[in-house]
Image (cartoon, rainbow, N blue to C red; front, top):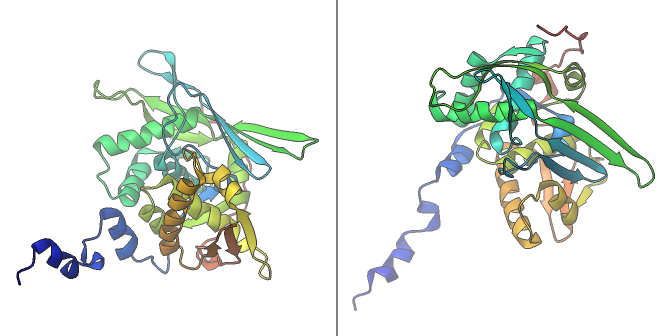
Length: 319
């Protein structure tokens, strides 16, 4: 008896035979090197998150919570060299400002200088991590996010219900912009930046090393990058004799931007965790109905592969 082709195909075409998507290919087929290239994130920004998606350029404030700590961002302005007027910029969002910060932190630590020339180092980093051409639309969108980041004021607050402490500041205290040579381009062109003295000094004390290849493999996902950096900062501090439980409610407050229903957040969160596990295989954690259990784990970058120099005296601003 003849069978319809639809009855035969399911038996022949198995799920494991389907070609990998580009994201799956990046996660599955790129080995992490034994002696990795290293980038860094500030420990505070490992514990809190920037927007995943554009909240709208009219949104001037952004707040996220992690336990008793709150991070809020205030969008700002930069001077347009073509018009000599301040331009209102939106908040930084998505994977690109995270990638930019990792790279700039690495440059600052590598050169022990808060002053960074962007053009050559940033375009090369974009090509490595995003796997795309360093010119055209990609680099323009990266530089737009850098401009947003440079204009943003950061504030951290902590309260115990009786007393509250707020610390405010900026990541960069100087950014040099040029008018694009192509008049059709609207993105202001940053060429140099300088970290603020307070942030630069704090970075040397609280930098968390990350594997650049792992960052590249997660570069499509802001949540994936945030989970990777959070676990890199958190897991090695867990008591080896006592796993730590982070409840689902707390996880949603920290990572659940845009998810109104817990069931939707949990589904995406667990899927993203599986991807992070592929690039951080030594990370030990397990999710159940109560939340995420964290177990003491080695850092993604073994100490023998990185050494952060001691903080140096503040460098005077370049005028």
